[in-house]
Every structure is written in C-alpha cells, then in structure tokens.
Length: 293
Image 1 (cartoon, rainbow, N blue to C red):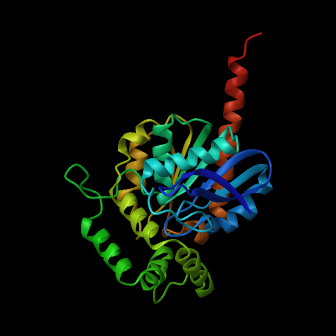
Image 2: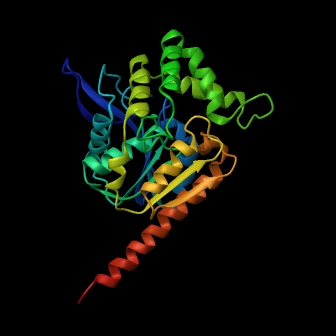
Image 3: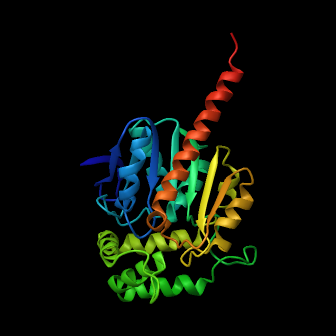
C-alpha cells in the first residue's frame, strides 16, 4: 500500500494519507466526497488511465485507510494535506477533480497556495461556494438541516449512513439507479471513517464560505452538477459556483442525483477526458504562440 506523510498529531504520531496511483501521463488527482473514501472512484480509476493519464485517488485524513487523528478536519488543514501529497509525489500540470466536499479542498488549496502545481480544476457535485443559508447567502441550506444530520449521526451513525446513502443516489420506492450491493459497499466505505472525522467534516463543509477562494482561481475550470441533487442542491451550489467563475465550463446533468459519478459514470468520464485534453491542447497552442526564437 502507498502512503504519504502529511504531519504529526499532538502525541507525535505520524499522520499518513493512503493513495492509489495508476497509469502514466499528466496527473489527475481525485478528491473524494463525504462520508466515503478514495475507493468511491473505483470506476474512474479503471477508466481514466486508459486515456494517457496518471490518476491518483487518496483517502482524506480520518477516512478509508488513512490515519485517523483526533483533529485537523478544517479546510485549511485538509488543503495542507493535499499540498503535501502533491509535493511528496512531485506532481506538476495537475488536474484536480473534487467531488462534493472535495470541491471545497480545491477552492481552499487554490486560494491558500496560489494554485501551485495545478493546471486545471473540476468541481463535481461540489459544496462550493457556501452551503449555509445566511443573510448574505439567501440561497443556502437552512442550519436546521445540518443540525438534524449531526444529531442523527451522534444518535446512530450506522443508521444515518444507510439512509443518507439512498438519498445520495436518488433511491426511492420507484427509482433504483444503483443496486443494493452498491449501497452496501458505500456503507462499508463510510463506516471505516472515524466517528469524529465524520462529524467534524460535516461541520466543515456545511459552514465554510468558499466565495473568496473561488475568486482566486485562474486556471481552466469545469463545473458539473445534477439538477436533481437532493444532497447538495444545484441552486445552492453549482449555479452559484458558475456565477462566481463565469469563464468556467458549466455542465448540468438533467435528472442526475448527487452521486452522478456512479449514475452517470460514462458521461462523467467522457466529460473529464474532454476537459483535460482540450485544456492541454489549448495550453500547448498558447505556449507555442508565445515562444520566440
């Protein structure tokens, strides 16, 4: 197994992130959503390397096979973890792809570290720019929704995760876009996380304001969101992110739920590949045009 050290905890124990590293070419780093782990990208890890890409998926601290320290679940620390991964693997010309909570890590990283090593970014069903409803963010989600989530997790995390998983994919009495086996797999992924990490990360993605962070992004950007997302409503996220990044490519998946990386997996792969290849081609043409002899 592959790990990268990102720091130490208060007791001097090493904090390590587990990651998978597949294929060759310019690197694509996949940042997973809450409450899952890097293995949620199972399909993309099997497909993207076929397109001359080096694909890296890691487990956020507290999740999957990564270390599970007591603290460090704020976005500044999580962005620092991402930087440590990019630096340790010496990755350049990177495409960052963040799903849901992972979109926040991209926004904070790009602002905090000036986009070092990164050539392009993609926000997939992302929590940006600011989920919480406030006086200056009237399209956000009511605090009571997040309070209920935290209360239910503290009461019975296992039951919460199983119920949440169905909402994630839009499973109901008449719609079954994923199998029970897949839901069981997601439950196993989610239950591997520490209880503290699950709670603290929910607080982080529900209360962190990324509006300023997004204005610092100056690389090609892709935004993909499903218009039937009941977990991170498009009106509170995708649409507002696109408004703050007017030069971004914004694609709405009609009828898609939050977990579109599974329900729309072929389309998502095609769109990511096209985005990476088109922006790489543009970068090559621009470089050639500005070269002097």
